[in-house]
Length: 117
Image 1 (tube, rainbow, N blue to C red):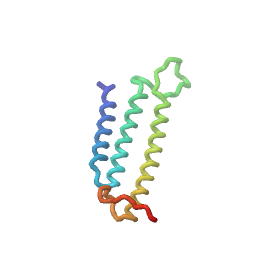
Image 2: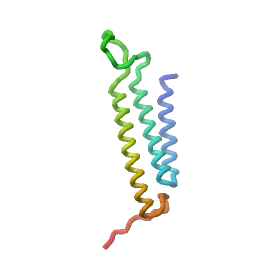
Image 3: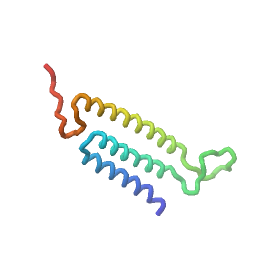
Image 4: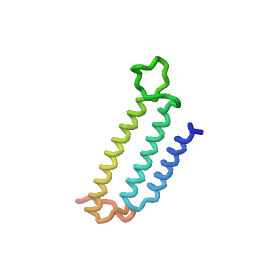
């Protein structure tokens, strides 16, 4: 069962985030739910790269054939975290501008922009 647990946690996080995105009535809540969806990718990537009984990926004093965790997946997770933080910051800045210009953060009360002639 330990091999299935990270997959279930990733699916649960993705489902909770997706439900929050679908039912959100506020842009900041929507951005937070998007971050929860993205955190499911962290769990999923770490579950893919984890090796049961494996050590750290340092092979200085270990014999060949020693089990180790995949370092490429760990680097992908770190990259995913940085990209997620940048996307979240950009979306929060855009939502701040929407609030300044329109006075609301409710996606349903915003009307589409008209083209100026």
